[in-house]
Amino acid sequence: MPKHFLCWPLLLGVAVLFSPFIDSRLAIRAATIAELLAAADSTSPRLLEAKVDVARTRAFFGEQRAVPNPTLFGSSEELGNDQASVTERTIGVRQDLGFLWSMGAQRSSASAAVAAVEARYNQERIDIQIDLMSKVQRLQQLIASLQLSDTLERRYAEILLANDAREREGDISGFDAQRVRLESIAVTNRRVTLQTELRELMTHLNRETGLDESTLRAVDIDAIRAPTFTNVDEALTYAESHAPELRFLEANDKAASKSVKAAKLKRLPNFAVGVGQKSNDSDESGLLLEAELELPLFNRRGSALQQARAEQYSATRLHANAKSQLTEVVGSAFERWQEVRQVSNKSLRLDELVNHVNAAHSLYLSGEAGYLELLDAFQSSEEILSASFELAAARIDADLRLREVTGYPILEDK
Image 1 (cartoon, rainbow, N blue to C red):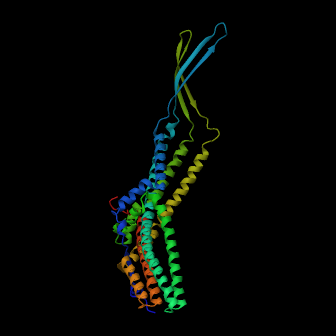
Image 2: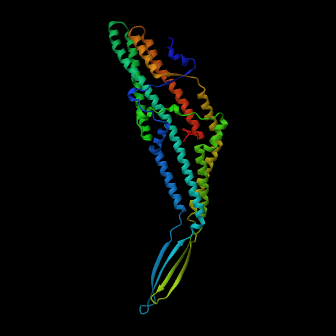
Image 3: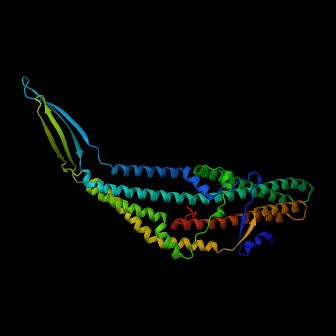
């Protein structure tokens, strides 16, 4: 049996895209992509936790910049025997100077740690934005699929009622009626699956953005401008200075290297000096000078250096691996991006598929089409919609993947 004309573009190798229509009862001002991303910045649990990490590291950096507080000390001693005792009092200030050996290295290490955690935050932010765009597109596709499924369910319900009467009158066979009934059950099952996925997706998006379904369904995904790369070399050059993962690994490598230097200097013995005033009951007074030097007998800071060296080795290897793989990763993403952009497409609207379903329904009830033509029309509508969604998903996935590996922003003015 020949397929319906709506299937011809697919059979000829032409991809078909759809622009879902929005129910007028749900029509609202379309949220911009900038508003969507801003909502994620202030709501996403992962980003909020990443912000806490940045604040914690900055606070540690502030501590490393501070000079240790001096210590105030005092004492009172009884000198001599009971008949001729003298009370000697001492008060003074003691300052730890051991920080002088390692303070510069510690500050440099803490500063590098701040740069690394900020780079990690930016990478997390880009990852969340990319995941968010992909899921919003899927949400809009699910809503469109459910609109078509709703139409199919209503039409099947009407057809089943009519088939019961026609079967009793002998106009159709029991096999034909049962075949339509089974397909209606399959449509209902698919609709339940779509609704389950929609609820799970909405829960995730609401947690990440705080926006409701009506706002998310109106986001204009097509407003994203395509990257301006004309060849893979341009993409690679851009990635070398903007790729979020590479920037984080580079900053983390530098931070680990400076941590090793700081750990080495912290092994030096601590040193403190004090100055004070002594006085006694005989109105005698004098100046007290003291110095304390730690004896590094037990090497108690050696484990910190070993840990710093292990972290440096790991950070250096990860950075080197990412740099060596950058050309292949960017090249693969760019090639895939070009492939999906070159696929031919023809724009159709969802309401055209709904009209096609309604037309097949009318022809069947009027006896102008048999149940095979009816099932073919209903099934082809779902298949074409699904195929269009697969192409749309492939397009945005390739686009987002290229942005992920190069660091190209979703919004160029960001």
